[in-house]
Image (cartoon, rainbow, N blue to C red):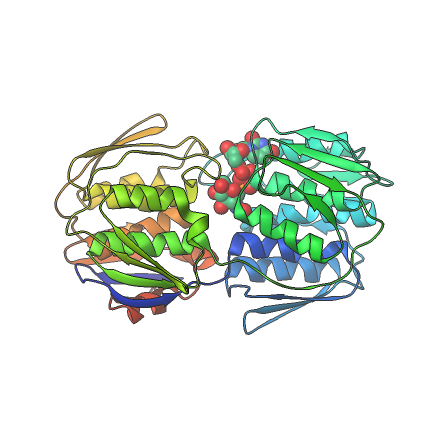
Length: 418
Ligand code: UD1
């Protein structure tokens, strides 16, 4: 396992290029299971989660080959319809093969994901939707076993807008008989990107990006060549790096229109933005101002930016209140930030952050993916040395993060744990 050693306090300056979005690439790769033949997905980030999805496709009998940010997938020989526990355990997004397998082959067996560091994260809404489409679902020894002759279009209402749930059911509905309406659907840009990829495959989808999505089932889909959108959370994370270091970073190739809520809040916190055709320049203040946020499904403030934003607030002038409404246990980073001197009190789903003038470096333990990113934000801001252990999670979601940071002047080193 690797660890990161960071000496904080340096002003970051320069340009970074944003990678393709992991959370768009994963469902689009899964969607190729709806087709028969060779697809090429472009701008796929080189991340552990992508490799895990590739292993899963290999396990199903598909060919998966990754090179130079491209995933080459051939689905002609898919003959196994099971996502085993060992793969789902390491990556919850493995559950995204459920909808495509069931719609295309009439059967699927997927391990139940179980809990994870940020909460229980059930998949009951995925299963409710598939049942409404006529699938027979059983739970057997920790696995969801689903069968259907051909799924049928219907109206499905989500009690909570779920991102992977919307994606799973949208994929399933593309090959169903008749029209499916997904109501209170997730509106995230990654859902829209998946819809666009499916439309390129020949699917009939209207309304992705709104809370009602209409999918008219077709008899078959064809392989595609498709390029995924830039990663809005990676871009947002670099904005917070500029925010804590008084930096001046040009974030190239991002889509600021996917980051409206975050950018509005970062402006309130004192960051300055200059939009250019190729990206956005971010200039950090000498000290951020306290700003309250509440996480919400898109287009609200993203839960995947909550930890990084809280770290920015830990050195702000004044007190901010941060409310997490999407996941029930997403404050794992607080204990680590406190070890660096942060003054944060958590009560239920609310964190009250009293800004201090400087964090101090400390040995830290990374927990989930975005919490790990927030520890880098903290380390860059802190006085002295910070060692972040167990960066395994970070490698699931941020492509070459230490190289990108080195390129803009950070004092950062990745070393093997003894
Ligand atoms: C996706 C993202 C993740 C992000 C999250 C919220 C991927 C691979 N991951 O995760 O990075 O943090 O969206 O933006 O795209 N829920 C249920 N029942 C269900 C499904 C969800 O109760 O069947 C609840 C969850 O517990 C959570 C809320 O709905 O409280 C939203 O979760 P969801 O949108 O499903 O998150 P993911 O799709 O797992």
